[in-house]
Image (cartoon, rainbow, N blue to C red; front, side, top):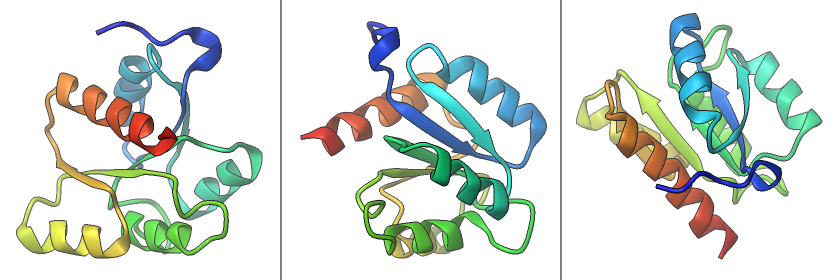
Amino acid sequence: MSEVNAENKPKLLITEDDFENQKFLEMFLKRNFDVEICDSEQSFYESLKKKKFDVILMDISLRGNKNGLELTNELKKMPGYEKIPVVCLSAHAFKKDRDNAINAGVDVFLTKPVENKILMNTLLEVVSKSKD
């Protein structure tokens, strides 16, 4: 897979509350994405105010009062944000979790652990499709 030109890297917001997962995802994904990380409802909305993202990697479990599905649902109702692709990456692996995620508006649902190649290819693919 070819690396993305540094100036044209898609902007990725990683919404993840686990510090170790944050560091791994950042190191792994920064080759192809301009990465920013948040871990709660508050930092999520602060990040959205600062920058326009091309894709969001969303965990279900987050710090604070709202989970990733609630944030996804709110995001998809916000003018100008409804078309941003959301890839849910969660340890919640039951069918009802997938159904709840799809109903909340996620574009792709992946369960942890996920193969690195699948994660990278999924993120690159949803960004490519959203630009069409």
